[in-house]
Length: 81
Image (cartoon, rainbow, N blue to C red; front, side, top):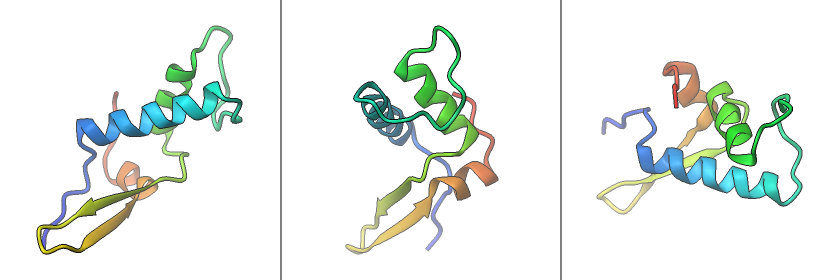
């Protein structure tokens, strides 16, 4: 079965939103924060840099699933958000 290794707009939103929540609750940023960055902007830059240790799980019509590493997706596709 052919699975595309591109993030959907829903996956991007879920990853950035979840990471921004973690940052706002005190998690350490994985990129160098700038002076006036918000948690959302830091999370967005982390996703673009591909430094988040995230696994995207895609459910298949057959009932199974496929796990794809975010680093693998970013390596193949240049994300511009």
